[in-house]
Length: 273
Image (cartoon, rainbow, N blue to C red):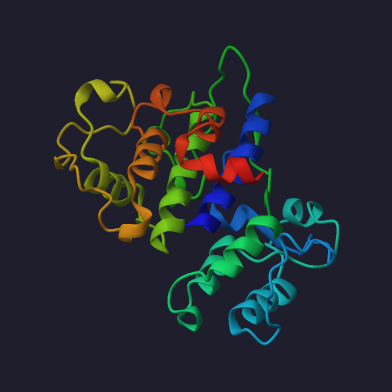
């Protein structure tokens, strides 16, 4: 959980930066998240030194992923890197950390090390657009389907930065669960996955003129235990509250990146930064 929290905090920090400059990313997904794992500790810093065996299988596997990983297949991502070492995909790194080699949980010493050594960057701005005022129509053919906001799936073309916020909620769910949660092979199936998790939206939560809205859709009730499929250690009150603020059906009621950074769930990470 601390690793997930640190990754998400840095992602929101990056997103807050680009949103403050009126830029919508429009393609936030795990493969556009770059992670660098590199020691920054000085050998003379005995107060924070951590003894890590070079023979440890978890450390070796993390280093192996880092050194042998390939760049995402985008020119924009390649230009983001200052060295010839490709960063691992964020989920690949997390999967390694919770592998059976360490009993399915991240060891404390690795958490402490990674809190000081992991660097996260948002990449691939090929679909990014300025967010003008007044809002101009934009294409709704954006964002990989599993991370696409519901209003965009429904054909809304005057979206804003809240589009990226929904994608961040999907990434947080995926990091906590270990695999994508809202995954469908079509737009309709993706919508139904949203509804099964969050409940079918009531009429006032949708703009009536959305092109693909259907009043006869199946009705799923919003359940209080909607996040109980996550590991018990990962679903405290704070993270549930943050998820609800990110995955809100009404775009205007989603939190901003700045508000996410100030959320209580990040308090311990914020102190460490």
